[in-house]
Amino acid sequence: MNRNKKIALLIIILIGIIVPFIPSFTVIEMFFLLIPFAIIFVVTLIYLIISLINENISTSKALFIFSILPIFIISQIVSGFTVDNIQRVRSNRIISELEQIKSEKGILPEKYDVIAGIEYIRMKDNEHFVIKYSRGFMVTEKYESENKNWKSYGWND
Figure 1 (cartoon, one colour):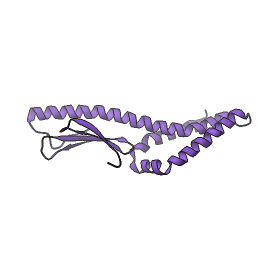
Figure 2 (cartoon, one colour):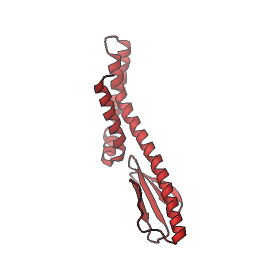
Figure 3 (spheres, one colour):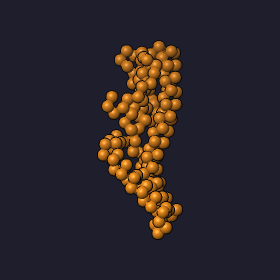
């Protein structure tokens, strides 16, 4: 694979990693690009099959063109999955620390320094709190200490 193709794939992967966390890009992708993506996939698949049958067409070029869309989509899925797992571990650690602070001092802190992308909200009753973070594709994971459970909230919730 030549240098230009490697750079193109790297850019596609980087864009795929970033897109799930920018709401406007997610909306554009889900509502305006889903059908074009399906058409592009089918067309490039047909081109790949024809290149395998016809020796005059470069199979490596067809394979590269065909692989662009799946690599873009897989990088988005992997990015969302990875961020969700990392933020969940970090959030659970924060939850443990907050519960320990509450048991030692009897009250939750008004503000708490959290790691990037995680938000801490103390409820008005000063007894409960909410921890939330985005896992991409406009989905927010939210932990409510009152119920002691996690819930997922989508773009329409």
